[in-house]
Structure formats: structure tokens, C-alpha cells
Amino acid sequence: MAQILLYAVGSAFFPALLAGVSVILTRDRPAALLLAFYIGGMVVSISVGLILLEVAGSDANFGTSSSKSSPVFEIGAAIAAFALAWLTGSKRGRAAIDDWRGKRKSRKEAKQIKKHGEVQEAKDPWAVRVLDRGSVMLALIAGMILNLPGPFYLFALADIAEAKYSTTEAIILVVVFNLIMFVLAEVPLIGYLINPEKTQKRVERFSNWLESHGLRIISIFALLWGLSSLGKGIRDLLG
Image (tube, rainbow, N blue to C red; front, side, top):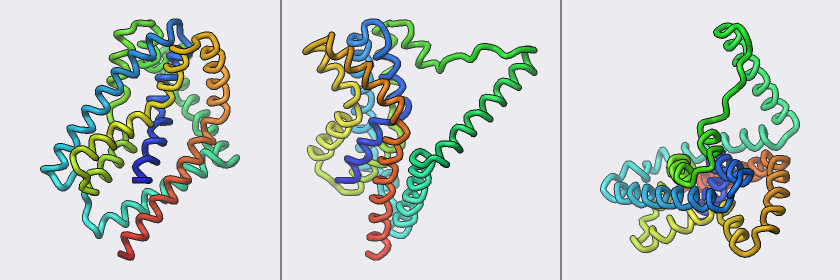
């Protein structure tokens, strides 16, 4: 269960969800937009999660790998997590990321010059453009699309299916997982209901802090995830 909760924390910082919340918090009427985004995301995320668990009940291949392949998968996931932790947590790793971003930007500009004869203004991602319109309905739809199950959620669902929890326990785990996953939306929403003015100031400070420390947070999570996966892989291998 600890690994399932760890996946939930990781999902809270998943780029699509984090980007959606970050954009909304900088727009007019953030409370209404955030509520619509949250409702859309929660409804789709919980519904799809429960549907996948129902499918897993009749298809053993969804969440249960063989005992021989499971340790290999877990150890492989641990290695990938340690690599991510190094990239986002070390100076050399972050320098490599910045270098990759710079080269990627240069390639895009080169393609634009070749195609249009000049550098065109880069378009924001579609989610940003949709949320920029300030429509509650569009925020609801964006929440539904952006919060389809990501990799950490699928890993958690696989663990839930493999553990053979009862129907009630599985439903509770899925709901708790989503409550944790959407915590960065839930906390501001509660704040806006209690004290909108103070919440807005705190949200601005938090956004600045998150921009400065986002990679470090990902690094810490990746390290914890790697240690957890490595421990599970070794236990499965020896067991």
C-alpha cells in the first residue's frame, strides 16, 4: 500500500496536471475555473480507474505480471527512477536538461525559418490556450482530458489488482489515490472558500516557489520511487 500512496504523490506532480493547475491559478476567476477543472478531472479519473479495475477482475494480464517478470520490471523501473533523480537533482543533470531544451528550441527555430523564412512566435500548448479563454465549461473539459490515467496511476491500479483487495477496499484506495493526486487543486479551492484574498496571495507565493523548486521535488520523489521499486524487486526476486 505504501507504494500505491507514493504513486499518488508522484501523480500530484505529473506535468499535465501541474500545468493545468498552474495556468488556472494565474487567470481571472481562478476559483470557478479550478473547481470545474477539479470536478472534471476527479469524475473521469475515478471512473476510468474503477473501470480498469473491473476489467482487471476478468483479465489477469492487466495488473498481474508473472512472478518471473515482476522483479525485472521493478528493478528496471528503479534504475529509470534513479536516472530521473540524477537528472533533476544534480547540477550536471539540470545542465544536461537545459542543454537539451536549448538544442530542441534551436531545431524548432531552424525548421520555422526553413518553412516560413523567419522565426514564428511559438504557440502555447493547447491546454494553456483553452484555459486562457476563461470558460468554466472548457476548464471542465480540459480537466477531463488532462487527467486520464497517467503512468503512476496505472502502476497503482496494477498493484491494487494484484493485491486482490475486496471491492470496497479497492474503491476506497482509488478515491484516496485521487484525493492525494489532486491535492494541489484541493488546497487552493478550500482556501478560496474560506479566505479568497489571503489565498490568492499565498497561491502567488506558492507558484513562485514551485517554479524554483519543481525539479528538486521531482528528484526527491524519483529517488523514493526508485528505492521502493528496488526493494520490491529484490524481495520478489528472492521470494
